[in-house]
Length: 480
Image (cartoon, rainbow, N blue to C red; front, side):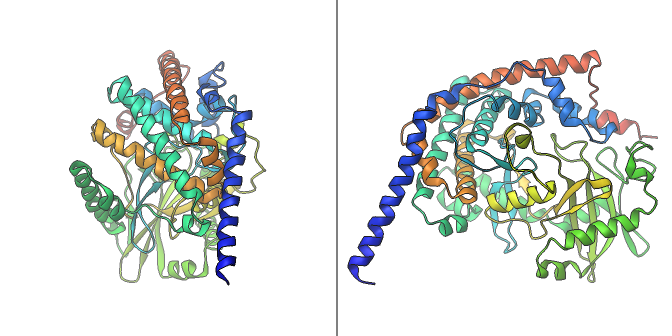
């Protein structure tokens, strides 16, 4: 290729980039950035929405879901993605639709190991992933920082600064991705080594090193003695209700009328589901899993928003006695899909897996999906493999500000990777603080709404309309 041809190609690429940015900027004429201050459809009964989200869950665990949510407005916010999705459906959006997380709040980011054993920081919960407006993720994340800041008793000015830094970090990183080739964007990873090299605050450096040390201890082998015991030539998962129990055991929280309790050949059903799961994996993963033998399977309650959905853990052991824990998690209809028109989904577990693969820099080695008995959809991944979440309650304002910037950066990478629309989003955002100002206003107004909804929720629990029970309260039912 001649020098003239190369120069022509560069000029052409620059022109195309500017055209795409201009396309995004033009969308401001239809939806000015200031309109993102609106919080949407709030004239609704939040309790009815929570009840709709609880439909189909294990009945005796629904009170535990509410018991975890009643701890604070922030815990309530974490467990009520359906309410915000409903409210956001009444707001304007830029018209740029892409794969989004759907439940993007500050506690849904964390660290995990790639198959190559690099430690990444990324989004780590995709139960609600779906095509949707990119603003929905950014708004839920921004509001979570204000709700969280109030929970941690930071000042209003500090909370505003969290949102300011978050949104502008997202804006700045999206501008960088706009100029990168799509392959470069797919290869980009935010590793802990990279974070450590870039950190200038000694406290932040110390926290990153400590996180890396903690992650190294969170392995399948370290989990084995905590969750299991040896019975003859097999390992058995220990019952510790309400957190862990065998579905058909003496300490089950399943009602006798539940369809899972009425299956005649549960072992055959499990084997069939596992076989279907294997068919969703690449050949090398299937071969790897062939070296393991299943030992036991039990129910394990997780998170806040997921409590009551059917979540299991399966223990497998290789020929050297080394463990592998898989998590089998029910996937139901995304809250985004309930309130934003998207193409129909044939398998909700596959939706989660494919959305996660699109948005994460690297995904779990054993990520796959299957269908359970009676038509429920599930996805599988490792239960524990150097995975952890940041403990924001231990962060001071300075560290939490840095965390907000990091979350904005991660979300920009996930959106750019999954959509290829970085230039258009960057054009819409521009280079000013206008979007940050709009989302500061949105986040404060929505945090006020969350507090109002929380009070309604607490009143519903006190009146008996909803039943809420804590982990300790439910565990007491099983004490002798």
